[in-house]
Length: 373
Image (cartoon, rainbow, N blue to C red):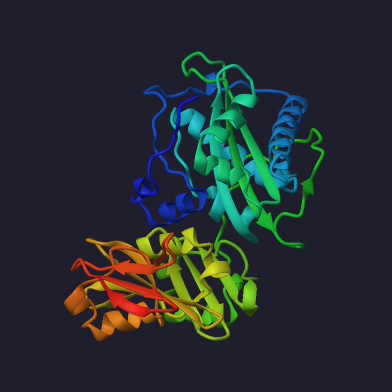
């Protein structure tokens, strides 16, 4: 098999795409061949064969997870239908391209964690799929995520003629809390009619309501955010979340009200890479222009993470109320030192450091406070 990996920034054509691939730890658009597949290249299999193959891969994944002391995942036929549609799409195109269905499709909403992995078998050996994922650090991390508890396995089968592969496997990996999501999770897969590709959601303005609805309509409604991709759902700390089709999510928290995150941009990308509200908390504001940068602040339990983005530095995270940030501004802030070129990071020697565009590094420890190097 050949790798589909590039860097997550390879998907910058759309902001939603970038956020999705950040979640996956993967990237899109790595061509496997210059060929494309005709409908006649797709090999149809029986429902029994499909269920047996899904069960085989589910068992292989769970056996691998068990080697690391991780709980088994269950299988959702609803999620599998979405994944099957994605597998067919890629097979017909003749190359890998991570889409947005596994994170934004209305049928998979309700998750608190999501990843997607894709691989090929050239001889109907499903072990090849797992072996590829094992060999790639970001794929392996997705398969071995301790947060995962549900997957959906989509296959597209081919004859190996105009395209060299026989099976394309597309697996969505999720965490659904009790009562969330499709709620059709099983450990034993039985043959049923395939769910098939799930249609795009249709507009239902009744889904946009309450405090999120007020923000939605005050800030441009469908023109700005697109259509709702499902109902509002709750998350940690009493917050509410709703996803929209124009690559954006509106968050509401008791502390900061409603704010939105623009996913595939560098700041939304950074937020996604750091586990959303589960790590950084809720947005205190939406992205705004700040002294020649774009900035957005997030807060959880009194700890503020401020993310600054410029074309020169990319998106960099710093403790917004921390000692390093205070020292930075005391020394003149962005107008003197420039913006951070590194995240605020604790190094192996125990020192927390941030380096700025001027070349100045501000260091901090509990014992010594801050100093400049």
